[in-house]
Length: 356
Image (cartoon, rainbow, N blue to C red; front, side, top):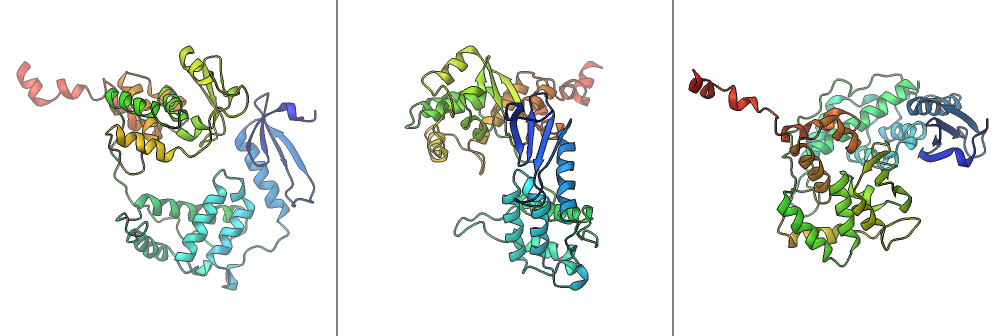
């Protein structure tokens, strides 16, 4: 049966749609805009992605493989080939390509076949000694260079799997830098009240209700700010096109649903899409709240998760609400549960001395 526009619920990524029956439909032109169209329906998203990647790989099978022995290919050439075959399909593919090419330039764009783990270690050390901007006093972080390492590893691994690179991945055994777990920053009830009051007085009224949505559902600011009227119904907010690619539906109160919808468009985007960053920062400052660098609106998501566990919520339910792909991403909030490590009070030697 042919797939029609009515069958498509949403586009997961370029060339892949989720269907009304929860299957996934692939429609691509691996040979380019004028090439033959390939279509297939599969049960799982992973299978759809693999089919898509394989079809592009087959379409380019006639191309000459990358030949490291020529000693002319640069790291940027590998990045371009990776993007052509696979990177384009990633949600952050274009941005990742930009980061990779920028790092290639900083490294002097070395010959790919001669690139070693030692080369990357030298580059990494140099990056860690680099300020983020003029007169900021802030340095490039270990997390940033770890991301770069992961991106370059992915380039080599993908090209090797597709038969486009016949040398080993030089970064395969290189360990990432260890990073201390950051302090878990979240707002207490007094700070929440103060911040909401300041946001309500703001010249951008949408910020107040967007913040309430984040605090009520654990959404990222961008997810809440880009909601459409059709996403809020049945006392639930339905999030799609999320960072993880997973759609999720979070219950809300009738009162919050009415507050979100009242006086706003009946179709299309609910909120003005102007940049809220400076307005939120100003409200935080007026509320007298000090946040770590890089937190700002994301503190609302942390606050939801933290209070969820403080109120003895279930860690597995929290994972589902936040849309995390693994429990490792959620477990950091577990320590806030009332019962977490509570046996330390009764099982320590001082406590047992008093009872013996």
